[in-house]
Figure 1 (cartoon, rainbow, N blue to C red):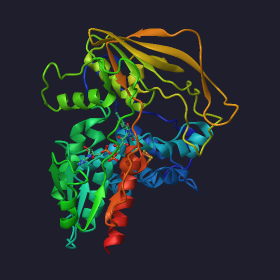
Figure 2 (figure 1 turned 135 degrees about the vertical axis):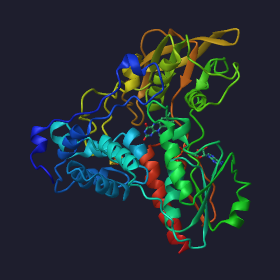
Figure 3 (figure 1 turned 60 degrees about the horizontal axis):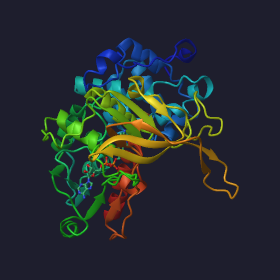
Figure 4 (figure 1 turned 90 degrees about the vertical axis):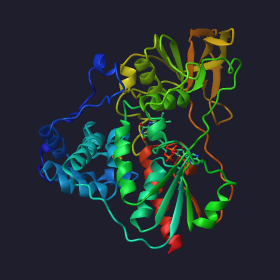
Length: 449
Ligand SMILES: Cc1cc2nc3c(=O)[nH]c(=O)nc-3n(C[C@H](O)[C@H](O)[C@H](O)COP(=O)(O)OP(=O)(O)OC[C@H]3O[C@@H](n4cnc5c(N)ncnc54)[C@H](O)[C@@H]3O)c2cc1C
Ligand code: SF4
């Protein structure tokens, strides 16, 4: 530990976002970076606690005290080696991880000023790419072949781990490029897609073969069973939760990912016919669902030039502040989250149920909603929804459904087929998908050994 008293003298400093009037005009990443001196000072705040909860809280088992110490001492290459020992793609988590480790940081639990692990992680990784600390591995082949279906963070992490262990890995991906939701869900203003391309070049140089535009159905998987010793399914959660209420068929009602994926493809240079293009430009937008996907729709709608955005959520408003006394640590704090997209302008409402989509000539014009309350259920179980006042109409020409994804169901597979990431566990986080991919690769290795 470099400076045992730094946490008493130096306050947490986040790099923050680009100024609102500037960032809203483009899809560039919104997060800024600290300079080297400030970054090292932030790293010095890590106390190397006797029992560091951050190790346990990070699904990858990352060791922030170790790389923070190296970073504080200016040993960037060592910091990267320590970080990449547990995290295969820290350039992704360094940008978009909700930093479960920081929630568990002793400095969070005591003074609500955790170390800036996520930003430190991004800084270490960018320095490693810039300075050429990242070596291309040339694993010795063991003669076994593994197919990975899906190239999201789970599939990429599984492929990387197996490749490094000597397996010849082929990744089958139905999209035209790799990344899964990293590329076709998460907006560019949170994760620039050049970051994924950069990692892809490395993975390809290390020997992983990618076959794009190949959707592997269960029937078609038969040929894989003959050609590969094991198969890893990492196909995510492809089915979004729908809202089958009157008016669902109206033009203007979309799943969030229809908008987000298309916008990312447009930024990648793909062209769409005018009648295919989904855009919030000049429109009043209603986002249904109060989570992160909804927040990404808000930021995208602003950059497309919407007139207004409202986000509604059926559940009550979460508590404000660093802690929810009803849900204390070690549970993840379910407190009110205000993202960069919310800061860009949005009416946020909670306890709102959606009754009907309204329209004229087949086009959406508004949404009938009802304010509600949740009352304890005397019979136990899920609280009861009770209406408050009369229904109202929210004007909207576009609605984005951001209410989560259905957990996939799987048949029983032969013993050499493994499932990981969101496909196995339901919609979650990039860091969890990566951890699941790595653990699954180790199971494949044990099985084949
Ligand atoms: C809008 C949005 C924003 C998010 N923001 C964040 C965030 O900021 N931070 C965070 O930690 N998490 C975030 N998440 C969650 C995170 O993206 C996912 O948990 C993670 O991507 C899951 O990884 P995965 O590899 O299991 O699945 P996916 O990323 O969904 O990848 C699955 C891949 O499998 C491919 N595939 C599917 N079926 C087939 C088939 N039959 N044949 C071939 N290929 C197939 C798909 O095309 C896809 O490429 C967000 C999710 C969404 C929707
Ligand atoms: S991956 Fe996420 S939880 Fe793990 S150390 Fe990095 S920021 Fe923390």
